[in-house]
Image (cartoon, rainbow, N blue to C red; front, side, top):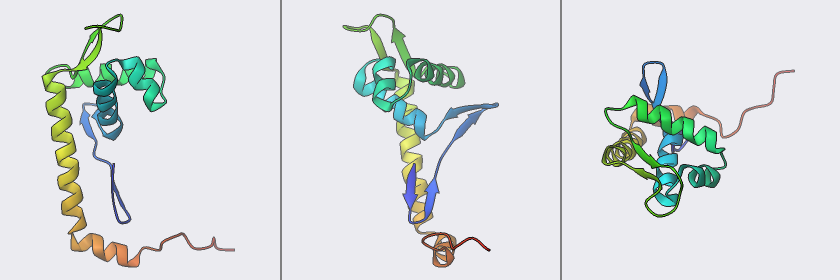
Length: 126
């Protein structure tokens, strides 16, 4: 999720009624790549194995190929790893995030909005 001044960009891709990809799923893929398992990635992100597994399952069902390949058991060649499709989706998502952040930062509309936006909310009306 990119912050550009007061603007918070949260890029999400949908597949039917499912959230196919967003900042949390991108972070989860990066954690799986680092940790080598869904359970370790979930722990690193402070989520349960079940939640992490459900997110991976949704991602794997929403793209032309699975993003994560799993082999039960952990250790050795067992665990989880990003597929070539998963690496491509993650890289394209991060590139699009960066492109949107750059474009937004230069947009005069954002500059106008930022000029009028308070740093903190005012006091509630009595």
